[in-house]
Image (tube, rainbow, N blue to C red; front, side, top):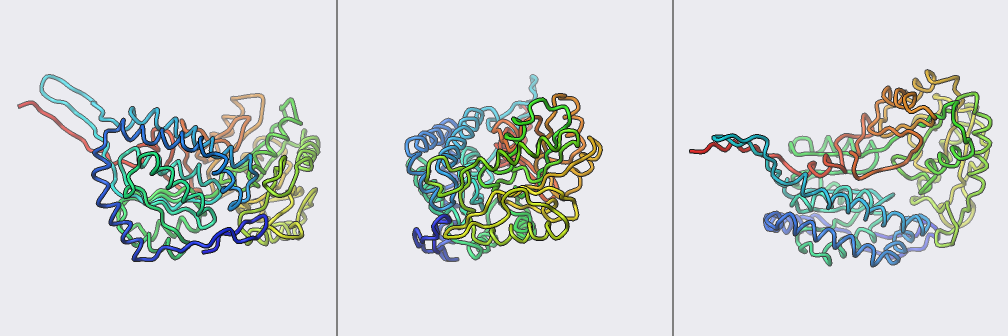
Length: 455
C-alpha cells in the first residue's frame, strides 16, 4: 500500500497490508489478553490513558508533521487536532470513574440492587482519515478505559498516524496484545467484518456504514455508525455583527478544507441580511491563503483524496447547469497536488446535489429565505441529521427552530464544534449510537444487574 502526500503526490512510504492470516493472529492475541486488561483496576487504566495524552503533547511536532504529510491539512490545524484529542482524553479520564464504576441503585436491610459495567470484550474500530486523532480518541480511549481490547483500523489515508497512535499507546502502558492495528484498505475491512468481534464502531460515509451494519447484524453485537452530514445553518435577520457572523460561519464551512462530518454544508440567510452577509462571506473566503500545508499562514491545503477533486467539480457543474452562480473559486488548482479553490455558490436550490448530498470539501451553497418558516422547512429537507445551527440574538427563537430539526446536535451562534461532555450522535443517514459524554463511555460496556439479598 502506497502512502501518498496529497500536496505533492510524492509516495511517502510503502507498507505491507494485513492478510486474513495476520488479522486472525492479531485477533487471537486480543482475545487472549483482554481478560487480564479488564482485571487492571480502573484507576490503573485511567493512568495509562493519561500518560498517552502526555506523550501526545511531548511528541506533538513530530505527530503533526506526519499528519500533515499524509492527510494534507495545514500544520497548525494538525497541531490543533492533537491538542483537541488531548482535551477529550482529559474529560474521558476525569469522568471514567464516575460512569464506569459500580452503581448502587437501592439498598435496605435485606436487599441491594447494583449495576456493574462490564467490558464488551474485543471491539473493532474502523476509523476515518479526516480527523484520525479526534475520531479515534472518541472510540479507542473509552473502549480501553472500560477494559476492552481494541482492533484499530485507521483509514488507508491516515495509516502512518494510526501507527503513531499504536506506538504511543503502548509506550504509555497499554499491553502489546491489547491494542492491535489492522493495516489496509477495503479488503482488510472485509476481513474484519467476518471476524468475531464483540462490537463494531465505524466512522465514515453513509454508504459504507449501511454496508457494515447490514454485514454484522447477524452477529447480534453492538454496531455504532458515525456517518456523514449535510449540516444546515440559518442566519436570522436580527444578527448584529454581520461581518463577524460571516467570518465565523465561513470557518465552520471550510475548516479542514470542509472535510468534516459536522462542517457547515448549506447556509440559509434571511432576505433582510442576505446581500450584506454574502458580501462579507465572500470577502472572508478570498482572504485565505491556499498552498502547501507546511507553509506558514496557509488555511486551505490540498484535499486528502485525489478522487474528491472530480467529485466536487461534478457537484459544481451540476449546480451551475441548474442556475447556480459561482461567486469565487469553482475549480481545481493546476499543478501537483489535490488542491481545490474554496468555492461559494449562490442562486442555489434543493434541486441541486450541492444542497442535498454531502460535499466534504471547500464548497458551500448560500440560499436566500423569506423567514424562519422557510428556513425550517429547508433545514428539515434532508436524509441526514448530524448538526444544525442558528445565528440570532434571540436564544428562544433559535432553540425553537433547532427543536424542529431532527439532528443529534444543535448550535446557537456557533457551529462545527464538538465537546467531550456532550453526546456525539447522528440521526437518519448520519448514523446512530453515541460517542463522548457519559453515553460514550458506557457505549463500550454491557451492564449487568445484581439483586443481592442477605441470607
